[in-house]
Structure formats: structure tokens, C-alpha cells
Amino acid sequence: MGYSIPDEHPQPGDVLAQLLSNRRYSSPPTSGNAFTRTFLEEVMPVPEEFQLGADSYLFMYAPFLGQVVPIRETLGQYCVHGDNHGSGFIDYDRLLYQFGWYELNNKMMKAAADKYGFILAPPTADWKQIKINMMRYKLGISLAIDLQPVPFP
Image (cartoon, rainbow, N blue to C red):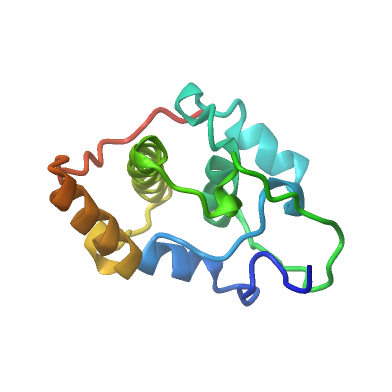
């Protein structure tokens, strides 16, 4: 279609710093990631809470255990359809799902940072997180972000 996902690739070696400072980094969808067996043996099985969005568990956890190396060459295709996050479609249920997804990822990143001795910036340090909190406030949904660790292998 003439564009890549993500449109901006992380630089090798700085992904963990990006994740610690703003709780995210650019990553392709699941089919665009490859993981070492050692990494997968360390983090599998994916916790049940991540049944939807298991890819985020893997690519958000990866920088804590090793270097993330982008491949800038297009090696596959990604199908955008009405039910995936790339579709651009949003309704109230999907918005609520996104709120839960961000909270779950925040918990996971906090737990991983604590487990491996890193300091994670607060969730209010990133503009995307601030926008999510503003939407939650406007909709009357609790702003409290429970950062208690989730269980890890």
C-alpha cells in the first residue's frame, strides 16, 4: 500500500531507554516480530490477561531481556480489517478495550522494570497516556492506574 508499519523504526540499542522513558516504542504487528527461543522460554506462557493482545506482552517485554533490532526491509504484508487495531474504526466498546489494554501494559511494564531493576517513568510522562487519561476523565471512567505487578514466570 506504499507505507510500512511502523512508519518509524527504533534505533538498535535504544529501545529499552525509549520504553523506560515513555512506556512505548515503535514495533510492527505480531507477524513482523521474531523472538529467540531463549527469550520465549523465559516469558512463556503468555499470562491469561494478555489473551487479547498477546503480541504486546511479547514486544513490550523483549527490551528488558535483550536488544531489539529492527529490519528496515519490508518482508511481509499486514492485513487491515474492521476488527484489528490498524483499521482505524473506534466505538465505545473498543475504546474501553483500549483503556484496559493500556492499563494492562502499564502493569506489565512496571512489573518487568521492577523485576530487572529498572526505573519506569510514570504513565503521565507520555502524551499518548495523557490523552487516554483525558478521555477517561471526560467519560467518567476512573483515572486510577493500578500499577501492581502481574505474575511473571
